[in-house]
Length: 437
Image (cartoon, rainbow, N blue to C red; front, side, top):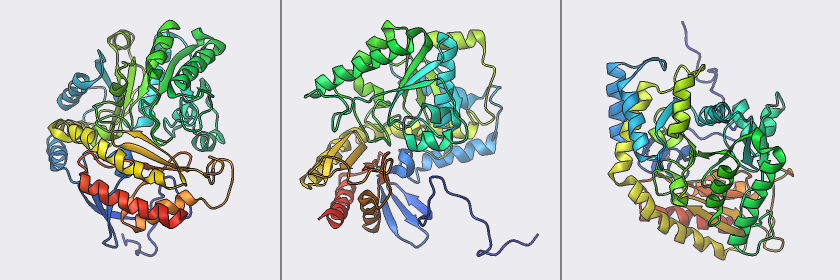
């Protein structure tokens, strides 16, 4: 059969796609990627906050190749040695007594599975998530997502119920009036308890949150907030689910982001970094009590590619890489990344810098009003944050756009060096100056 010419060949439709030109990447090594025009970029967004071990990690490539040449696929309903090995490895580093692993394919499906398990275990049907959160873009996960851009895009076709929203414990431009982070933490936790009471505690199965906000703006919660949330969930017999799709596998300087809060959830979801994104894989880690219930009652649904052996082999190799100094490097380099990004606060247009480990946000606000220069969820028109992202790209650095795009997200792979951080933040400094000065 004759092949279409390059000009006539149909192209794949990118996700999150508008009218802008789409960059084509053809090579990567460590923290650097190259496009099809031979331009090099420091990848300070880890593509989608997921290439945690960096590009070109040979241990992962070799593991994929070996597994594919041994037995490339085993049904998710049957046993697989490499699947069991990875589940054991994850359980060994999971917080507290979290033990059993249920594999899925994507973070969206992991969150949906965790919600299904919570509903079956508790008998409640509602799951509480915070406004401005992101938990996925399938119909079920989008209903959990508090980001209206995603939720409304899916809801135009079909609405799925069983979720309610509460306000996040943000400090900068907080919806609460506390004059200290501690006061805001207390108010935000009280608000969550109020929502549980008014939804009816018996109807609430779980509270689902990211330990540190991901694309919503790298928000770390004020001190004591998570401890208070854990207490509230225990009081009302509501499960606590930690969405670690972005924050897991070293991103925040520990194996899982919730460890930076000294709280143990009942269920924990993961994806992205588990294989350093070399192969799609995700899953849920459950407490012994919930896992026992699932083993006793059985699970009537499954996914063809959940726990794919090639992906699990990549996961084992990725965990070897993380255990070989990458998580320690993320913890150490996080301090330097923070100090360099905080230098941007000298610009009047930079309203806030926040984050943890290697997950940071820079928010841009009008210094006269402390409001965003442009809020894409509520108004149309040109957005200067897009200009900062574009200018940083011209300077050779890739950063992400937050949700909403009033901010940028900075999230390099874990093997990043101080010199690479300096180069990237210098370029970002130049981009901010070009747009706002």
